[in-house]
Length: 436
Image (cartoon, rainbow, N blue to C red; front, top):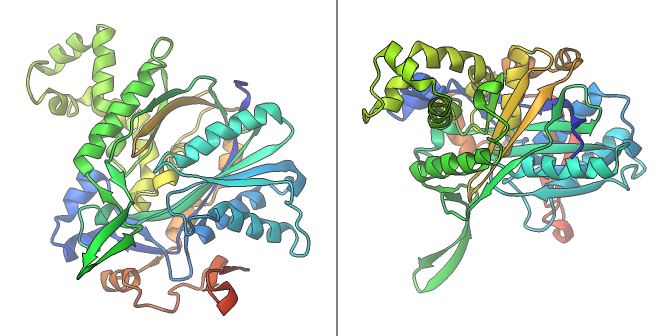
């Protein structure tokens, strides 16, 4: 793998509405501080009635192109989408994105006729798969650029245990040779095992004497089991890389984040194992009077100043945006990267990525910050997008989820879902406009 291929730029598209987690917690009879200080949850991104996964994905790509006006249609070899929020069992989201991006360049001609598109689906790791695949494409086509789009809407059943982790958003990633932002490392660790920790199946329901097929975009999941499979898969994937790598060799750790503090919970045991192998754990235990045989050792270790200092430096910067947006499924790991880079960036910093997709698969890989990264990050608008969102009440949130609101709350600009099924002959067609 050519090490000089990597991430040249990124752009996030954030929904126009936001619900404070405190309001949801109080309405559901949950102690707000448990969600804020236990899980790191502060706000939840919510889509308006004219926003969906296509508008988010397309908006992210167009924002990315606006940041890079030097890119021409002929440069773009592919637009690959990672998502688990598909709106069609046949036609990929990428095809809608292709049309809207084409319109951005030229409304009359198909100037992206040579641009390949596809959706890649494997729960929350689909966009990392798309990036992994696109890196190989750029090896063979070093003069081209590839755009990977991670886009999802994470909704759960109302009043379920997953409701407070909900979120939505998209991140577009520009990949090319000689990148300005981050070079992606040559080696990847991969681990795969078929599990049923989280899935969206076609289900059979008995209605009287009839058996009816149902499909619901809201998932069936086992949170505790999913945590176990996440930890097992990233451990197996990391073990492929440990001969030449150590966790403490990296300045930042970036995770797929179902909720903001999930990464710190998943990584603790791996850190302890590494410290033990390096002969450093005993000294830490002696300093903080810890017993390695104590059943609560991991929890007590995580309370030490040693661990907290490491956490503040290596992990916390990547949690900030997640705290204010919620779970973005495929986009969460890329949002975490943007959060870490906005928070503090130094050239030559080494980043370690832990990607996970339920079902279940993990990929572990690395990246190195480029010399020109600060100039790239300075053009991002994530904080401005977060601060400009319209706050909605809990009652308005519930009505949105139940489909009881027809008119948009916000008059925000950008890609908007206008109509579906405008004629009898194309009743499944979806129409979008770029409102400027």
